Length: 63
Length: 331
Image (tube, rainbow over all chains, first blue to last red; front, side, top):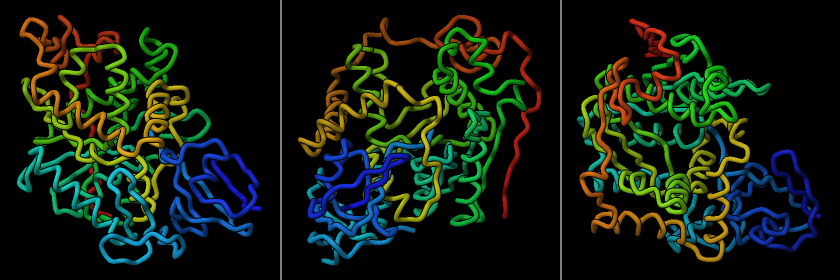
């Protein structure tokens, strides 16, 4: 399962899914988050495997 | 610092290495190095195209500790502009130390990237005797939420400091999503005077009014977050604790839904508005255009008679004679 974290939320999603579809699957907008894996920015089109851990960064922030 | 990932099958348009970001509205993917060059290159292009300022101008950048303001300051300094910064301590805590944490990000940014940069710091409570949440509580416009009071104070103080310290231009970090959300709100309510005035460059067309420009107005919020991440800028990630439920955030969500199905929709909405304005769509008749008066207390332009909205907040307390400015010149 792919481990997904966003702010204080966490999900586990079955692998072999593109980043963009993963973001939609957890109920977020692909335009409103960036995906980071091991400190590296990941393209929306990349297909993730079961061992991946993804942090979603909200692009709207600050004051 | 976030670096590029070797995964994915898209290649950078400029060097054919693996791309880290796909800019769907431009039908272009870039690697980290070329994205970090593309942002300042495009910024410079729009500074020139919209005649925002020149290398001879003294520029004051309003910084909050957020990704956009720190990034625009970083970009202008990378491009070689004379860009100093101003930060306004608002006194927002809400159990999160929000203002303190924001200031920490600004100071870290200076240490990490621009140790010679000049930062002016003002503290609203030190000058006027109350923080933003405190003054909002005693005003009808801020009783429910301090956001309107906060915006009013920031606009007034940015304008005042720019004028008093002799800066020709005041820069803010508004991105395209910010501008499109404001446009959405103004259009929903057909706010003709606001529509007529909304622009990436607001000229200093009244005495006491600083020229205001928004060099990031063509970049998506997502691009600015990617710039900050890839550049390694440590910014305040949490939203202001008072921002939850703000209509501007709802409008951004709606626009992102359109964008997800139709790449470029947000950009077209805003850019075509500017084109329509150039053709005279929102030109107001003279009698409808806002005439401004001079505030009796602070002298800044105001649409009201007598005191401006900012001065009415402070219950006619006399203005402090000397405004303390902490100038951090070197670290």
